[in-house]
Length: 91
Image 1 (cartoon, helix red, strand yellow):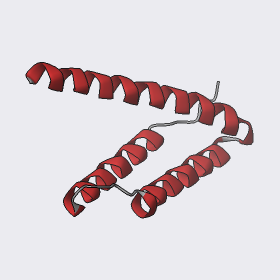
Image 2 (cartoon, helix red, strand yellow; image 1 turned 60 degrees about the vertical axis):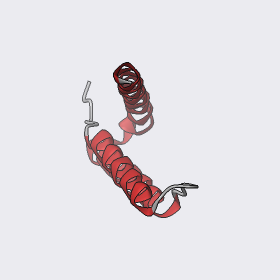
Image 3 (cartoon, helix red, strand yellow; image 1 turned 90 degrees about the horizontal axis):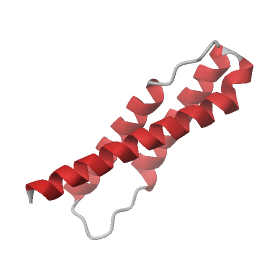
């Protein structure tokens, strides 16, 4: 069982790193041209929209209210952590 847990953690970590890097490149390429203030405003808008979507639209079938709340909280925290880690690259 411990091996399965470690495998799952490794897969989750790899997935999170991959998504973070893909999003970082996409967001940078899409919003870099407008300057730092515009870039930061776009990232904040994306963060707010994603968290709002998680909070209002996530529907888990066959789970308890506690599990659904936990998933929403973790997903929202992940989105916020991910998007607030993006910085404007002046290069």
